[in-house]
Length: 317
Image (cartoon, rainbow, N blue to C red):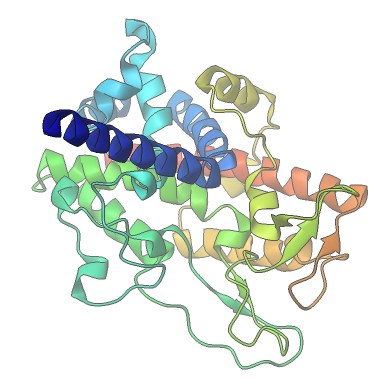
């Protein structure tokens, strides 16, 4: 009898853990998967054959590689693994093996680069809080490390032929994700105002109404969802083919600081445009706002894909 009771308690713990993970998954998936896979699809198609071979080999060292390609045809494994790898830094946020070390960098471990032995989530690597205010509120400097500093670090690791393949694999996967992140305008800004003197966390503290009956969303999540919420890699491949070609002059920009400033300006001009006001809202998003936001999201996604390919072709050449 005692053994049965222990078994029941154990099963209950497993079920509860599963439900927690499912609940968290619904909070962090959506655009973050679809958008990053779309960027990955664009980038992979623009890699040189030599670089593609190197990338394929490095991604096989990721602990999730077998899950990515388990039911994928052999000829498609490279591209699908690349696309799914771009979501990995988000997926570890719901992996119970990883430690949530907070949304702000704290201590010497925040900027360490040690490869897959690092079991910290490093949430603060996903964005850079460039400060913005339209009412004269005092502006603090962005925390470091952040998305911009980490792109520099990881790019240098890929260039370093003396670095271990395991470390280069880890840094590659983060680069696939972070280049996409810094092209999402609200990953490059935090707005400060008299009503929100501590900042709005990149629109996460601004509520919006997308319909007359749906006022429970956040501005940041609205932008995350602009390209769609599918988790189907085939849909992401199809989406990638619908995006307008990128102007060569813009595609050639390789400076991550310029990428961040472009997103910062897009956030000021589009994300915080009317009808978004100076506090937490809620604000009713009209069709004009939605259409303009969608246009910006498509442009930024296409840019991120081409620039990511250029970065990898240069670093691994």
